[in-house]
Length: 241
Ligand SMILES: C[S@@+](CC[C@H](N)C(=O)[O-])C[C@H]1O[C@@H](n2cnc3c(N)ncnc32)[C@H](O)[C@@H]1O
Image (cartoon, rainbow, N blue to C red; front, side, top):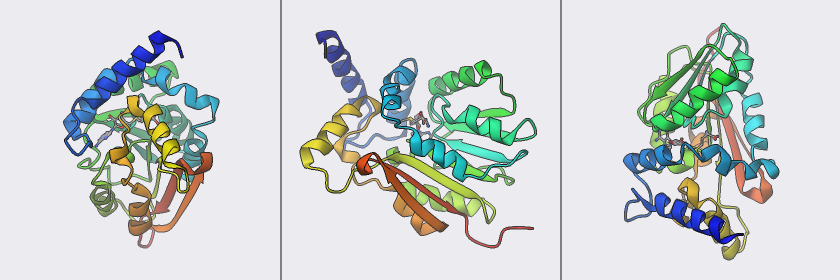
């Protein structure tokens, strides 16, 4: 890596440390500040993950939602909106897609992506996913590379389930600490993801455990030697007919 790239990575690492609590976990203000700063470069920083098909389970998650034309789907931690055109394609012009994020700047990028893809029916909500209340007619919820930044994901998922009707599909995809990797490899993975705010302090955040606990028919899939997970399930209770 050239000296210039190293210093850029160092600067991003510095940015990533801003707003970090002494525990090493960022609070909501810290996440917002980090992603407001990253918004302009996020898609370029994330591009190398395409080379290793890093969004494979994310595409699978979208398929697993089983969306139909006219559905209402919520994307928690939508960021620059990678999911949004895919979701909008599936729910069609009669459907509703809602992107939720703490960072206004990331939402601006998401708006631009949706405009470029000429999609209608996409809404943007500046909110903390932990307190966001989805519309009553929501048929599916997705979160991609977002819940791993939320230490209180268990309460967030429990609350979400409480507000949703029975039979709503929920899918979360993201990074996880792979079992059986040597410590140096885990630390290297964490270092490579540092610009996105990932540090070893996040290693115990495990949203898939909450999905397993609060949803029916939960399944967990992994890829990339266990470093990426997809957890999906359905809100419990009898689906209204
Ligand atoms: C790594 S990015 C992922 C963006 C996008 N989902 C993707 O697949 O590229 C994580 C996003 O989650 C958002 N985020 C993290 N914690 C959040 C929270 N508590 N409420 C809302 N958004 C949150 C961040 O602002 C950021 O835009």
